[in-house]
Image (tube, rainbow, N blue to C red; front, side, top):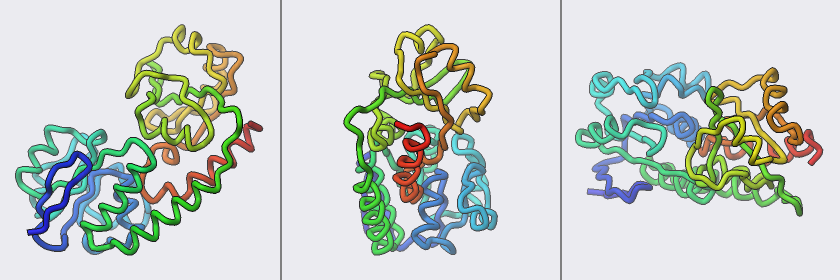
Length: 261
């Protein structure tokens, strides 16, 4: 019986090549399609929105943290692909007692590349995943990092303000982009306006997700940190750790050009 280890170092017994896969992580759903996994993918979440035409044909099994467990049982999966942070631990632990559940844990680019390779291995698309990771590495190696890295705050929520801490995948992407995270705290700390002001960032990036920041919020932040450059950014580019990484380097270059930094 083949045994694979996920990114939590859990052994996952997968007795045969999966034919009924459920993906409960949007970025990993997009990755599966990019690798060529189509007929084998039977279920995705309500938040799995890419690629649009393909996900429209798949059964929706609820939200990432509010999975419809009974519907999942009806689909009889032989593999569920989940994530430590994006899914509800209790639900995933329950499902892991019934089905093979492979859990990713991605905090940086190397971790994302390992995840892509591992998913290629457990789905039988090793060649495709190797090609994809090579293309991603090639694109990231072309990024020119400026001599001075701007101290950057990446906001993901409003009321209260929440930002990406220094141990997150977003923080890793800031580094790859040529910035440095203004936060030293882990995870996603809540910040008051006074704390945001005291951090005195050079740059504040307002993410398009999970909170849908809009252009109108730029002036709100400028009042708190008047010295900082404040800009809207594509949250998927900074936080999706699958095949969307192919588009990240070019986006980062264009972002710095737009901001003239």
